[in-house]
Length: 426
Image (tube, rainbow, N blue to C red; front, side, top):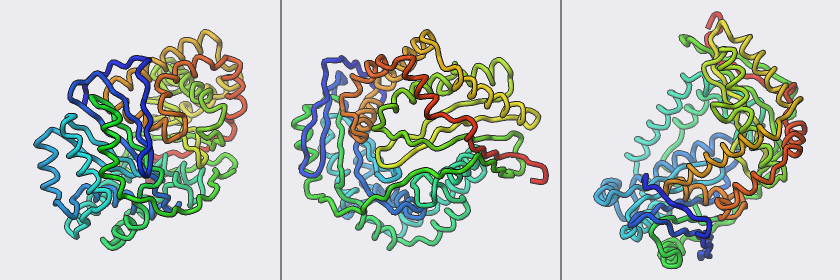
């Protein structure tokens, strides 16, 4: 759904209670169109096996309900130009729907059927199991994926949701699952725990909330597990090499853990610092290592998606030819150290802040982007109206605050390195 949304600051997001959750609605100037986005907490065990099982369950719930098979659901959606999807994301499952406003009651009914009473037949299970295995096997051929996964194993203990086990082990685990495992996981974990639903478009928020609650009110929460404290590992700088036969270049993931969660007072300053360093094509890393020295095909830095329950990390990804591997890594480390030691100027911060605000506003130009961003803020406790507050929050970050944050949280000497590519003998 690509309708352009004209968002005005006075258009506040309306927050309303659901029987078992929260609803956030925003009326937008997109005649007859609506985007619905939401999530609920699942609390799987922290091992990769349960997270893979959750991924399989999420893929299967839209493959038919007890009332309708997948072809009936597909026909009802496609005949109206609507869509419905469900995806797994660490300790939550997200769902989204796009439809004409008049079809929202039907789409909400289908969503409720799929989440609460999925069919889970043997044929659908076999199809999705094979698809997930094929996806994992394809990922195992991508050096960038292999490097990032190896870095996660350095940074996080095995029970952490961000820890990625070896892909061969993931495939083996998926192969051993049965449809009974899927049914059990759904029964134990799919419930209206911390349910959050967002609707944006040609809607009456009060009426839309009532319609959603009509279908989801019977879906009760279940007692969740007690979350354990999940931090990052305190390792000394480590280098891991992953041979990938037949590849022509190396992919590298550098990174170290962070104790800056989404509710930390330095989070937005750290986010802004990363934007200056490596989140854009005109960033420090891209300019110095790619444009000026010509040492990399691509380079980018990012913060792991924020969460209030467990720590994350800072990561730099780059791609290098064999003859430039050592020089490219040296230049990257040098630029990062320079950034931490020297910091940014007020002029640089002002320019990059305008750039970041512009990118953020562009992300709100569609119903999908707007609804997903509202959900993101609501999940993290930033408040649904942070879409209006984001620019002001970035504007409040001073040069001194940003440079202090960089010095306190970014540690170049502690960067771990995972390199995947055509090592000799691979």
